[in-house]
Amino acid sequence: MASQAKVAAPTKIRRGLWREIVKKRWAYVFISPFYILFLVFGFFPVLFSIYLSFHKWKGLGPMEFVGLKNYTYLLGVGGKAFWQSIENGIILFFMYVPIMTFVAIVLAVILNSKLVRFFQGYRTMIFAPYVTSMIAAGFTFRLLLENKGGLFNVALNMLGLPGIPWLENVWWARVSLCLLVVWGWLGYNMVIMLAGLQTIPRELTEAALIDGASPVQAFFYITIPLLRPVILFSVILSTMGSFGLFNEVMALTGGGPMRATLTTLVQIYNEAFGNFRFGRASAQAYVYFALIFVLTLLQFRYFGREG
Amino acid sequence: MILNRTKFVVSKTTLYGLLTLTALFMILPFIWMLSTSFKSQDEIFVSPPIIISRNMSLDGYRYIIDFGVLRSLWNTFFVAFSSTIVSLFFCSLGGYGFAKYRFPGRNLLFSFLLATMIVPYAVTMVPLYVIIQKIGWMNTFLPLIVPGAANAFGVFFMRQYISTISDELLDAARIDGCSEFGIFTRVILPIIIPGLTSLGLIFFMGAWNNYLGPLIYLKSPKKFTLPLFMMQMTGPPGFSMYREWMGVAVVSVVPLLIIFLIFQRRFTEGITAGAIKG
Image (cartoon, rainbow over all chains, first blue to last red):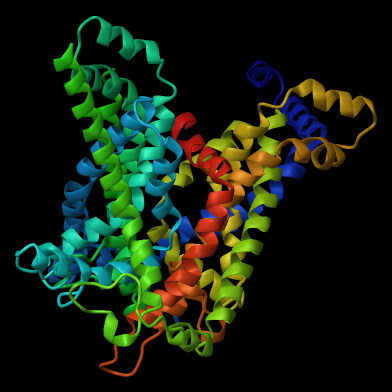
């Protein structure tokens, strides 16, 4: 409608548009409370952050324009902690996401197969950690992983094995963090996989099994490809998750030892509210955003294509 | 036949074994949390480990109550409850507008909203802090209640939910002389209660367990929510606080577990809706 009128008389469409807006005024009444809130607290900060990233500011006093300095700073030694946090995100991603996703799919397939009883009970128990405060869980894991007298090491010692310096060693600290994250998120992933499986007709796998495929073949050649969209969703969330871990890190390791578990969100938080360098924190947040964005696009292309 | 049968039994055992092992790993921390909170100091780090304390002690709980855990529990509840109500109000209203009206700019406004969903919290964290400081909301519960209501996922969720309601129902109400706002409160709201419950549970859980927000905005210990309370609770040097920490953990975990057990179905519905449809 609008495009037809465009050539004829611009004022007419403006009046037409206006009439349409007045006619549908209720729609605007309904969305505006939300939308105003969104513009102030959701959208404006995104723009303000760009502005901040070109300034030097401690949160008080005047801002000083510094151009691209907050960005170029990241290329030198000053960016070390930031890049370490990005590297940690990638390391953590490879440490827990493939295993967690795979186990979540396997458990979901088992629960969905109707081969086992107590479906509800198992699902509830595996999902329960998801509603748990990760601060509370982090402290509990710290207790379990305590070097001397923690349950895990006591159990290892009782089996005649030496204890593990869970939270003291760079790599073990990462393993500990992954344990906590998998504990907290496996159930969530399993539940969305279960929901995904319920959209796949049961006859498909049944027909394959009758035709002589083994259950393992049916799993890899039928279930996994059909679950692809759900897997993609879960992997994308986990990608953002592994850079954005915060509560888990603060409660369990505090980012150490030697920044081995410092995630990007913790790093940006420290820069902003520990050092009060708002400009640098904003620049880091934007670099991080750009990286996440590219990673998500790549995952879409890689996983979303076939099938 | 017999071979097939043993194979079946073996594979079934494997399946149960896998599930049970996972389930055990999941409930172990809960058991350990609860058990430690009742132990006496010298029972915490011993080998072999003690699950049920021989001299059950409430000292841990007494200590955290003196320390103000109940006020903290109330703060947590207050923030979670009010932020949930406020968010549900804004999101259902917005969701209804987007679902049931065709108006100029609708698609643009909506895609704009969805596009901001991929912006990580790290980007808005600092500017939000600056805004909150400028409007004088520091050290109040408001920054934990109001900004969260501008939740794009919430509007997306409610729009999906409301768009399944037939238009004829709304037109019938219109013909009966119902005002537009009356349609929302009298026709739409009663129908979308299950959806509001699902979304509300997600909001409530998120607010209850939120740590980063309170960490940034709350300054005085009297206002601390449970995660913050737990993080700042340190005993005298050289004194293990694990029993007391586990007490706070129990206080913060049990209410949500109860809510989750009651509303399990609604809860999982809310969680899976975004993954499957979106």
